[in-house]
Length: 382
Length: 202
Image (tube, rainbow over all chains, first blue to last red):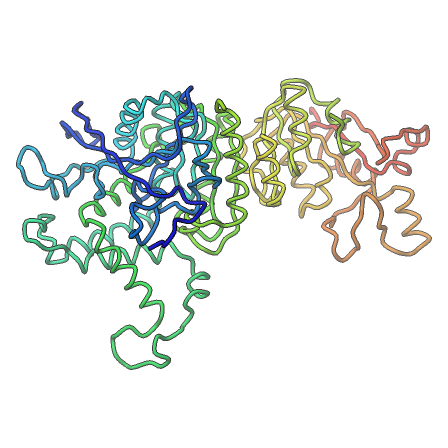
């Protein structure tokens, strides 16, 4: 809990909710008759309404990008390192919007929400949503906020996939697309990791086929394993060696199955804090959205062909030790963009932090990112 | 805007307005920025150095962070009107392959190289018996990134071997001064040599 709010933080923030009555047709064929999106905004929208930035979140992210809800709040928003006054995504210059995706568990309509047709939580009956469903819903929020064109849409990981989808589906609605630590589709290895996580949740006896809310329980052990697996794939071998090595919690081994190595303690801590805040059905949905994402699928796997529609200027960033969304995946995106003669810059940041690097304030990352945001700002009205 | 390097002015003169350009080893983006502002040129720079990447982005040019020794396989054939390689060939692992790649992705190539046959270098090596260290080659033999040095004659011989037709050649000096000696004996008095070339038509 912060005793005083740090000077470079946006400070205390509140979230808002929009209710949508216009039915949303989903890729899976189902229709959401009505739904809510919870979002946060920071900074001021200028008179010309051309300084708005949308930040799309990743698997376990939320609309809460930065700041604190109260002085008792233990942690700031998930991108506090980059979003705030004077920071890379500078809230003194930009009107920054974060939105919780459909299917989420932080306020937007999702499995935990009450299904108006049954007056019970949707649970497993919440339809599977895709990245393009999200982008469609975000586009409706854009209209409600009175924004015609985003100065930039920005996202890391699964958030970066949404940025790509924005550039394809709504080319006139964004001037810059910033795609960080992302991929145009998952590899088999990535899908496999997601499937192991899903199996951990779905085979937990407390899962009750997704109806665990009615049984007043949660598939805790499944969700814990899913999170531990996910989390360790977001780190690199090097950073784990540096952080933990083979260090022991009590200095010696005990020949039992308690927490002995520091790395075990860390993983369990990650699992503990996740289980208290994240919904298992949402986790399942998010991993499916990741697996299904492949905007080039309809164009014979030709990413260049599908990006013909795009017109935004792109900035693509990857991290050398990220093996879940490796630089190679970003190279593919960059190639498809320059195949279409689009403006694109690409930075490959030397880092041993693995996939999680995109959340951190690494010097070279900040340097290139803020240089690019200067460019974005220079095109906004003062 | 006055350009910081004497070879840049020649390159600007050679490149036709509104061309598509790929600048390999584009440094801080100065040349591409100049070409885009004054000649309506579009395209990309490729660069490996972190500091340069930040500066290119500040300068508002398209830059792709990449090691040139990994080749240009991400670029399709005939994507560009000009592919520029200024003072970078001598630092690449495989100069002959890079030249071939340049003419695969572009119609014409422009290369600038430090001339190892420059009179000062010849004196330093021939009379002094030491590896040359001068303005174009400022580092010692053990820490230089210039691992494939050549003279103008060497370069022209390689072009011939690779089926490359030289369209234009110029030699320049750092002080931007041209004298009669430079024109008559470029391999002796040129500090930097520039070539514009394309594939030989069979």
